[in-house]
Length: 112
Image 1 (cartoon, rainbow, N blue to C red):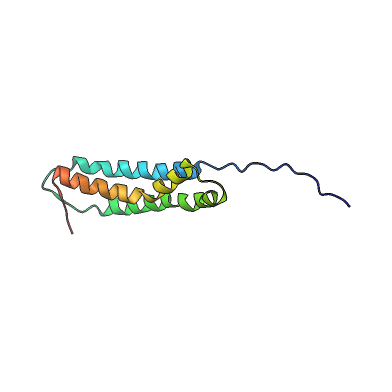
Image 2 (cartoon, helix red, strand yellow):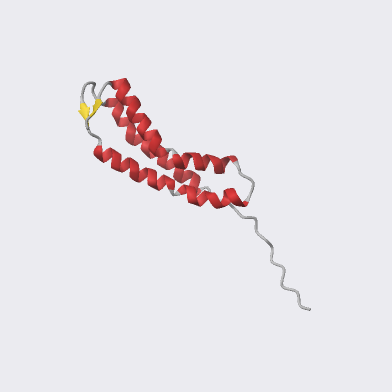
């Protein structure tokens, strides 16, 4: 009986690209939303382009979620994997929270 050749099994190396993708999406939305803290008070604004950019960046950050889910199923969950999941879901809420906070602090209004 012939035995198959022994092939050394390589330990699966998880990539950090999903983590950096999620962090990058949050940082991009943070810097995109920081502009509202310089709006004068009493002004009515309609941030339509901002909303489009925030949604696009949030969608790019959401791509990190399917990249990390197989690793969560395959082995014991690590802190880095769960951090990636949380950060992949937070770019849009972060940007919206910053807009609402800036509106309260600076006193401007969002036009319908």
